[in-house]
Image (cartoon, rainbow, N blue to C red):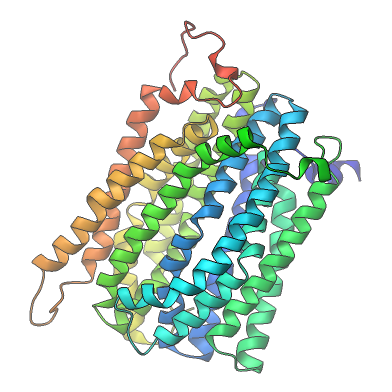
Length: 473
């Protein structure tokens, strides 16, 4: 019984063998990320099966806008996770408690902003993107319902981020699995039984996310042995708020940059017609699952690095980085092979239209070649973020996404125009993504080796001896 309870407790990653701690943390994190991705995938499967391909395209076209307007939460969650992991590693109970309380209040403010602004700008943005008239109403309804329920989404992500910063990835996983099952059940009820269409999918998702947020909060309230969460802590601490924003804003901007690039490229994708839009939705759903190990290792490296930086264990960070990158690359290589061998079977889960299946498989094979590169980028970026350097990953994202992906996508589309493809070949969208992933890995490795991230700790723990020579990974 005691051993079972320990699985649902905070995990001190400053002790023990680094690779074992990373694996122990990554596995439930990976399962949780898969469950999170299953939210959207279940939506797509149910919509595609019960409503049709146009509804599938509508849900996918709403994704980039949704991501763009939710970057506020991404920033707070990243900043909170970094600070929580470092203060936990440094065993600073007071600062840890104040940080968590500040995050909860900040989330309330940002949730209100999204609930007000989101519905006001959703349709204008869809029109700006040349969203086809056949799906724009569905897209608008989906976005508006999601924005009105943004508090559940935001609080789950931020409170789960706090739990992970404390090393507890098991609790967040369990709560998310419960919510995922609830999401699927509500999807079927709202769409198949009540015939609510695309709005029913959005409603099911926000209800399930709110449930997972409540579970996370209840768990944190029980962790009184680690920090204090009471009314006196639920206030805005100016210094901590600025630090959270300083750390989180670059990550939020990174997500915003990525989302804006997706919106710009989505406009190009929309010009290819409904078939390509629907194929893009399917590919991104499969891609989301394929990326999960990379994101999981990246998040695990952030927590591992944060705790050890707080504990002044830079030597463990170096050892853990080598282990983490090797494991991430190995897993991605296996996934790439599986996608190349069984791509057709995956596509048939979403649609039975032969033309759509064949086209989706061709495009996925282009992307599959880049997953190993993303494994390197995510792992090393996770280390830099955990140490407090969130600016470098932001600049890498800016260069590879805005400076490379968007120009290549439109350039290739322009150069491949023909009578058969008047707006260019659809492959241009996916080739541009592959190129940007590859450059991202190269730049991430270069900046990691440079080592500026070693001096960015929010606790100052890694600045104690600037003259000390630190071995490179």
